[in-house]
Amino acid sequence: MKGYIMDSKKPLKPQCRSTGYQKDFSWVPVKNRNRLVEEPRRFLKDLRNDMYKKADAEKCHQPEMRNVQEFLECQVRRHMRLELHIPKYPNVPT
Image (cartoon, rainbow, N blue to C red; front, side):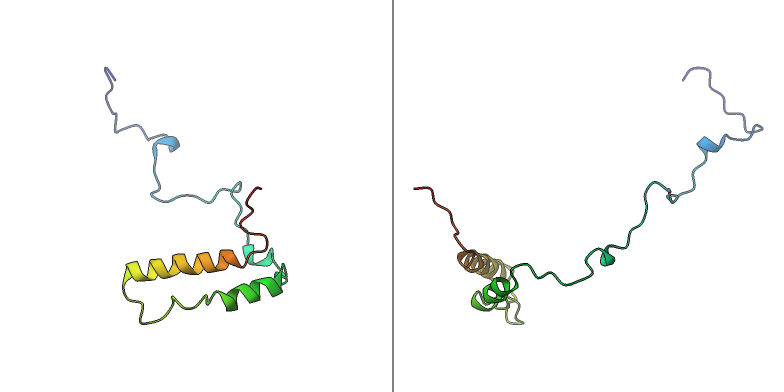
């Protein structure tokens, strides 16, 4: 900017001031997400319980699992076991 001289005698415009924190805007409403699902999800509950038991879902979450690589490999195996219990999975075209 050529020829700009800041005049400290004039008050600054409100647009030039900074608050250092974000204001609350009415167009960003805060919603309580806990009330959206008022009752427990009953979608395929028997299948989900069966998958949880057969796939041994808690096997990897033990205090003995201290090595990250072993934990991640255990998680991959767990996910593979879970996928095997999904009905009609994998769907291989014939």
